[in-house]
Image: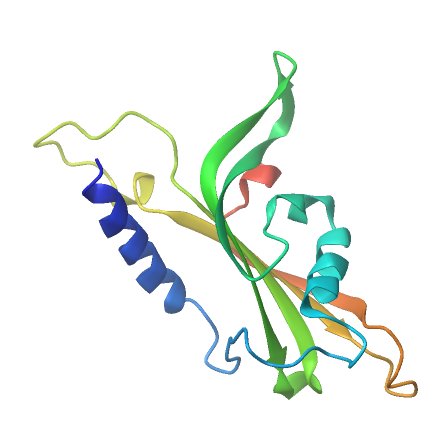
Length: 164
């Protein structure tokens, strides 16, 4: 299994790299939206816009996380899927230089491993991902104002938080 994990992570990285839009480039080295706003403040603003984002890193990067599944409590505990949560930021020049904070979660569908020699559907064992893009912008009439969340977009597999 230890040999398999790096291979799965590498494939997942390649898969996610190909899932982005050709119109939007992602980079974590651009300056903040406003001179008085740090990247950490921008991520904090995005995280505060939805309780679902509390599991994501507070700085650009990835970490292992427990993705809560929907459907409420079981035995007094929230069910969680082991996953990888990533936070990244970039500017979207096609939207007036708005800052986009991206939260992506990856997980595998739990279940019994495929027996040797059996034909098992790849969809059950390949990593799934869901991405939220939180768009922040400043007022055009007050460029020194603090950024605010102006929209959120989602894409990918159904997020485990939405399971019923």
